[in-house]
Image (cartoon, rainbow, N blue to C red; front, side, top):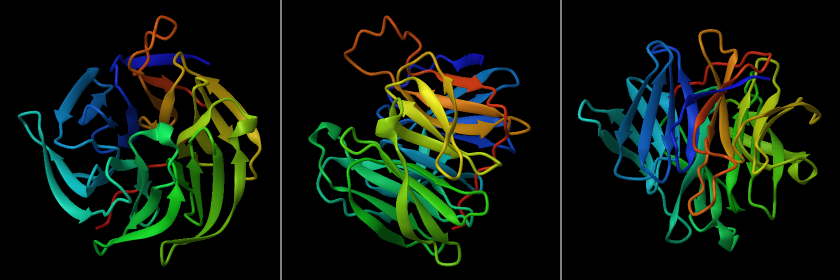
Amino acid sequence: MHCELIVDARNGTGESPVWHPGEQALYWVDIPARQLHRWQPVGNTHQVWQGDQMLACIARSGDGWVAGMESGIFQIQTKADGSLASRVLSEVAHAQPGMRFNDGRCDRQGRFWAGSMLLDMQQGAHVGALYRHDREGHLHLQQAGMIVPNGLAFSPDGTRMYLSDSHPSVQKIWAFDYDTDTGTPHNPRLFVDMRNYPGRPDGAAIDQDGCYWICGNDAGQIHRFTPDGRLDRSLSVPVKKPAMCAFGGANFDTLYVTSIRPAGLDLGDQPLAGGVFALNPGTRGLEEPAWRG
């Protein structure tokens, strides 16, 4: 499987890749750098905008974006001077100081979901939570007691929700039945125990067949699981910490993968860490829903 480096971004934590069909461009964030990135295949152009808080997860929103940041859910827009304009939609009362949002995306009906975590992940504190930001502008706590909520995804028909906890002490992915009318998950059950596979569960994507693609952080792999939880295939990237994957391209048949460049480590065996990669996964994905606030 050919893996192409498209941007040698050297992101500290490259996350939340989203394909923008109208612009035919890939957007993603570098969380610690507080940056929003855009890459366009036509012309091979790469742009960066600077925010005033850490951006963790994004979804399209009209002519801008909705984002989970440090202190809440914001609408953000890119400016010509390279900065980001932001407007708070909902502030969040974190369980303790030193927290931020992490993985997130919209459900098929346009509600924005995001999980929170403690910045010092090594503490293993169960203070993370999963929130739903509804179309009326309200932020609802849906699940508390997590460490690092991750791997959020929705089936093509929107009736199943996936969620993982990527902390080394957990490494599990759950599936929920999802009420599309109320935006309520229920009937949780273990979908995959990632301790049986290479890598911790990080960011995820869903393809047109309803299969779940999950980045195997620390293992340099992206795994595809069928809806019944069976491992179907694994793809490799030349870095140890792939962070999140997303389908894009004109036909949604390219799998884009962001990655992490750990600070303070010898990267001699992974000089491309923090880069963004493109793979041919052999299937197609779906357009990510925009926020309908």
